[in-house]
Amino acid sequence: MEYNLSALAQLTGSKLVGEDCLITNIAEISSAQQGDIAFISSAAYTDFLTLTKASALIIKAEFLEACPVAALVSDNPRLAYAKIANLLYPPRKLESGISANAIVAETARVDETASIAAGAVIAAGAVIGAGAQIGSGCVVEEEAFIGNNTRLSANVTIGYGCVVGDDCIIHSGVVLGADGFGFVKDGDGYLKIPQIGSVHIGNNVEIGANTTIDRGALENTVIGNGVKLDNQIQIAHGVSIGDNTVISAATAIAGSTHIGSGCLIGGLVGIVEHLEITDNVMITGRTMVSHSITQSGSYSSSTPMDTTANWRKNSARFRRLDELAKRVAKLEKTNKSSDD
Image (tube, rainbow, N blue to C red; front, side, top):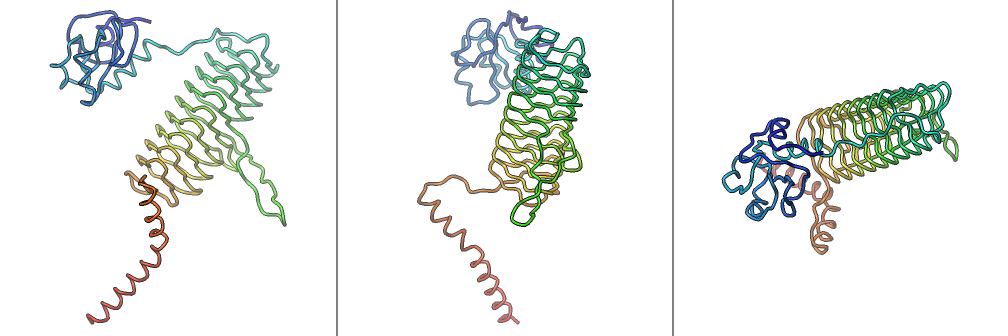
């Protein structure tokens, strides 16, 4: 795709300063060439302004004086860049129709505008919405529902009775609706607890590669509208996640925890079961969340990186915190008695 810079200004709500030109590509400011557009959003990259060979830049007004080429001036250059990237590189659309090498049950309902690739399996009673794209090797089990314009990359599994909304993107290796981890001690072994809930995914959700979302034990596991999940996330049975929450890679959320809307959760976060996390909470990477969060704000745990020698000394001191706390409490009690 290609656009005139003036058209991109209108489509992104930016202000065009300088000559109009044709834009065919987005590139890093350090490597951009003629026909490319690049962006900078912080002063850390202003050294590249005088060196760039890009045809145009997306910048804040404060950098305009130093800009040697045409510019799109925006209060949020990164957002303008994202909009332009979507225009120049629209999602690949597969041809509608069902591959001769797909397996589609007679009772499945596949919209005529949907695309079913080779090797996909659509089971009995499943519904595939208008414009949906089901990649090679996907399995959509019995009574599952895939909404309009939702895209499943290759080798995605949608469990029986699961619901995926409209305009979702689900990347390869995702499993929705596997059994939750439910067992009860029975003598020397464990008895499996049937997982009779489902998974409901809202609209405009993106789920990264190899993420797994378990079906509920009793109530459904629910992912709200606009949620963005990174790769290799584990979401256990009965979890609910509010609208527009974003979660980074390798986070694990234990069963029946409820996360609010507009939250930002970093990578490698662990969240234990049966917690309530309110709206607009930020949890930084590697944090272990062991109790509910009832107030919006930023929360962190774990120990920042240090030299190995210092880390070992501090680790030894951490183990003495309980003992030191008791000694301080005893001293405070003694001092209070003396004052009396």
